[in-house]
Image (cartoon, rainbow, N blue to C red; front, side, top):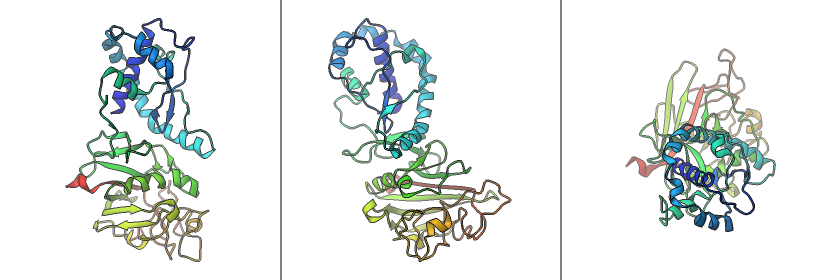
Length: 352
């Protein structure tokens, strides 16, 4: 079920509440909307049963005009989902709960009647999309909208949001890394790289846990887009890509056939474990992640590719000592830094 359908269903439920005099357990009041992995979660219990019997279909008959007026507000909420991911990451990093109250800035017409509602339950009760039809969350970005989309890689795992790119090479790509202005710090520790960081709508890294979950669910290909300060855009495409689990230090265990014009720079990182400044898994005597102020699948040499290196905000000042964003064969170092790096994956079946 698309996010818009979920939000529409939520608005319908709220509108019903505002047009009836139903008292749900002593008065609803202002109940916060709880998001966990940016899915809507509700514990309706007896209140939900009471809503079913006390909210007639006739109460929804005048929703057309109201829904039209709320379209822009709903679209705005959807755009905020990517930004909320960063808040959730920070909360988890500090040891807080997975779900927490968030103010979405909804209009007063519905803001005063927010309800913790499981939208899938409401749709099932209404006989709408997803009613009795099993899982409707897509498993990847194939045939989805361009932008933030909620996916579930397998039926038995929690869904999460990703950024889908439908504009590059036929679309269907899940954005893994996006760097273009230096607004996000990539010189981070293991815990950050494990769960990911940054906003899906700006610079971010999806997280090794999610990347492992995605690439182990199907045969995925990898696309790397690179641009230098001269605006030269190049790419590297690998027809198979996958990483190991955390117990395997997320090692780069699958790297297929290469094509492109950026050089086959990942080949020397194949089979290597992921390293961060506080988790030295490389094959060098030095701590490559600490030396390069970055993190990557480093091997015996620290002076190869470094796509998670320090961003060069001022293009007339080179990053030195291989600490910049480097791609061997396109920008080798030891000085300099690339301007744009994007890494995306999609199922190979989507190209057949």
